[in-house]
Amino acid sequence: MSTTERYWAERPYAGQKALIIGVANERSLAWAIARELHLGGAELAFTFLGEALERRVRPLAESVGATIVEPCNVSDDTQIEALFSKLTEKWGTLDHVIHSVAFANREDLDGRFVDTSREGFRVAMDVSAYSLVALARHAEPMMLNGGSILTLSYYGAEKVVPNYNVMGVAKAALEACVRYLAWDMGPKKIRVNAISAGAVKTLAAAGIRDFRTMLAEAAESTPLKENIHQDDVGRLGGFLCGPGGRHITGSTMYVDSGAHIMG
Ligand code: 0WE
Image (cartoon, rainbow, N blue to C red; front, side, top):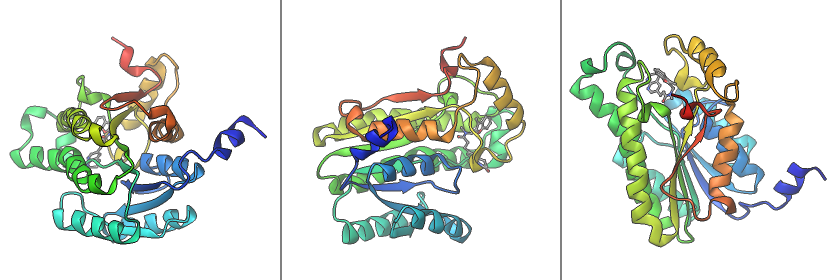
């Protein structure tokens, strides 16, 4: 038996249930974490936004034996409530929530941050930061055995990454939400953490100007001299949901080839 086979033979998430929000296709970071949890024996539920993504998500969900695939627009309380009534009815309890959702208007990811409109700021904050709070609040009563809530962040939360603009502000808020949620939920042994991932080619990065150049430059300038892969995020996500993460909460952990240490 190889080392990896031996690792998965332990099935660290056997009997556990995980809700995955933010799979768009096979390149999604949420999908990488979902696969990792599936390998370790977890049962999965997925959400999608709109019919186009439903057609993408359903086959992926089926490939890992998931039977719960529900719509969820995270900026709509009614849809969040419907999702959790379905989960309560089908599962009753929940162990993990993976939140891998962000949105800013396309025009706010270019040009000057100072030009962000009130509505653009509101939308970015609502979808990218507040949604974690709303989901955590609904998940909490189902997480009777403790568990893990994970979200995805990016270095633009801490330092200026040109053009990341309002998303940087929203990710800063998201990382602060992680800390306050960790404090609220700690007594119930629910851990809340963020993974700050290096730039990686996903649907969220498609159409972002000069993204390929960014990737190439990042690869050159990081200590490890290579870009990250979705699977790197999958492994850290699995670690944080598993026994390795038992006393880790409120943290933002980096998977970025060391990019964040550079001055
Ligand atoms: O968080 C992100 C991007 C999230 C995102 C992507 C889009 C594209 C399509 C949020 N909203 C939208 N809205 C759209 O209309 N990343 C970490 C990837 C990313 O995005 C950047 C980056 C990096 C890295 C934008 C500018 C500069 C760097």
